[in-house]
Amino acid sequence: MPITFPANPTLNQTYTFNGVTWTFKGNGWSKGITTTVSVTANIPATANDGSLWLDTESADLYMRFSNTWAIVTGIGPQGATGAAGAAGTAGAAGATGATGAGATGATGIGSTGATGVTPSLQTETVTVLTGSTGTVAHNYNTGGLWAHTSIAANFTANFTNVPTTDNRVHNFTLLLYQGATPYYPNAVQIDGAAVSILWFDGNTPTPTANKTEIASFSLARVASAWRVLGSYGMYG
Image 1 (spheres, helix red, strand yellow):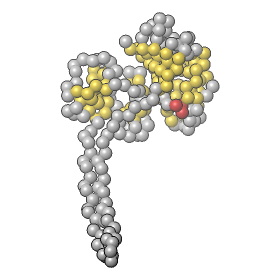
Image 2: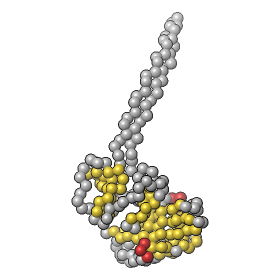
Image 3: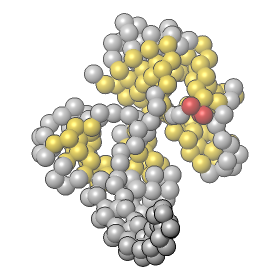
């Protein structure tokens, strides 16, 4: 089914659909993952799940989920150009010197009209980690998106420097580039302290060889305690 985001969301409110957590950024819902956006005047009837398309006629951004298109957010037209400021009054002509030219009066300064705002898509930096095994640090201060390549074994994802303010949710995404023997983050720590993973539908993931997989974790801080919600998806 298509995504149906909550009506009247608050800033940084989260919403999970099909194992993927979205965050409301004030002007739209953000997944926080860098991806390629295809631009076209006609959204195709079929496409790979997870692909993004920008409709140049309606200025809407679409994402493909479960073979169904869903509007992620309306981009909106470019804002109107602000009116030009009034021209300043010309300065008085300087007096003519005996032999040289007189001083030129100061140029009047007119105020400039405000420029219309043009919406833009946001991207996020991907931190690449290679050969993960044992306990692997994922520093909150470097962002929320990591790509794991040449994974050596199942590993513990230790999320460090995570703020402990109550009633907040912090989202992290791990891209797993699987080889012939697949591995995944089977445990989570927050600043070195182990926290149980509550997997989506109560099912512990089984990684798949030679695929690209995504492990998403939402770290919820309520009543001075952590709760970790995990989801897992396979692509390719």
